[in-house]
Length: 265
Image 1: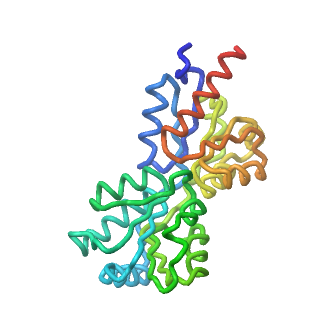
Image 2: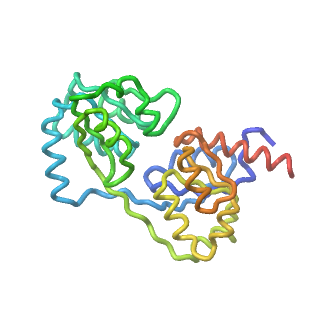
């Protein structure tokens, strides 16, 4: 078997529907099977109070010294909000992104320079950047979904910045009957599962029903050590940190699993 082949693998892909395509295509191009089960839906805000706050912040965008985008969803939705008010992006504002996919999305949509952590794809990695160490007296906007982790905002506030949480979408769990997971495990033959966030991990467990024990015996791919610890605590026996949330990181991890399976076979 080709060392890059994923032929033995039937991979459960749980990303939101609009974000599944790249990973599914990469799996299928390498000979694997992608079984789609989106666990989180990305929805509009539908919150008048948040909309009013966001509109006010967008009008004053040039008053921010830094803008941070936590995900590709935040990049897409946030860029659209910005372009509604600013056909030309304010040149004095520094832009930061978590992960290369988020950075590439911003660069394409806003045509601006985007900085990211060179050795990691988490909030903690971004906070280690020199530019984010001395932020006292500066105004920072964090584009994100409703809720989410607070470490970015809280840490930057502790460093003396004024931080606005610019919430541009909401995440809604997608429910399935327990029979759906039973069918995927039995007839679909899933032998690898993937999640990309703590919310999708929680929802994967929620929809597994009586099939949780079978599910936790499968290799589970996650994008960070933080999520790997969370998955292990939830009972997953074989958790693999891909060290990145993009398709190439996941495919590289899947290739290692397939190669090991080929040797055992």
